[in-house]
Length: 233
Image (cartoon, rainbow, N blue to C red):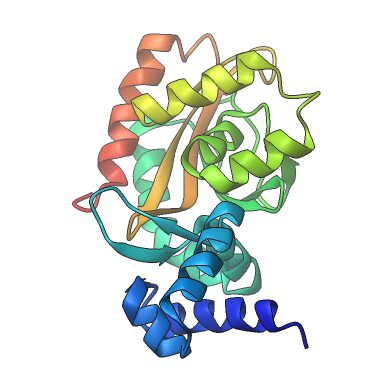
C-alpha cells in the first residue's frame, strides 16, 4: 500500500465526515498525522482540485473535482427532482427551451430539459453529452470550476485558444455565460450556475432562435435566471 495515497484518502474521508470543511489542525488530529505532513498533502490535493480554500477563511473545503466525482457516482435523479421546479419557473418566465446540465469528466451532460412550445425553437438535449469547450453551459463550468479549467487547459491547450480563455474570464466576472450564435448558427443561449455551499454543482441554460434572443433579451433573461437560482429564488 502506498502510504501517501492512503494518507491523502484518509484526509478526504475525515473532511467528508465533518461535513466537507475543517481547519488544518482539525484535519491533522482527525487523520492522526503531523501538521507539516497534513499541510503538504493538502497542498497537493489543492493543486489537483480535490480540496480548496476560500477567501478570508482558514478552513479547507472539499474541492469541485471530488464533488464532480461524487455527483457522477451519486443520485442524478435526486438532483433532477430537486431542481425541476426552478427549471419549470424559467420555462414559464421565458417561453424558451430551458435545461439543467452537470459536468461529467471533460463533457457536459444534459440532465433535464423543458422544450419551448414555440414552432421555431431549440430542441431538447436531455440525456445527451457535449464537449465542455464551446457551448455557453460548458464555458460556464470552466469559469466557475478552477480545477476543471486547469485540467482541460493542460489537456487541450492546442484547441482552446486565447479567445476561449478570455471569454471564460469574462463569464467569471459577470456571473453568467452568453452565446450569440458562436456554438450553432441561428441559436443563442444564456447559462447561469447552480451553487450549493459555495460550490457549483450544476448549471441552468436557456436557448432559442437568435431572432427572438438579441443580446439585450439574453441579458434580461440572465437576470431572471439568476434570481430564480439564488438562495431566495
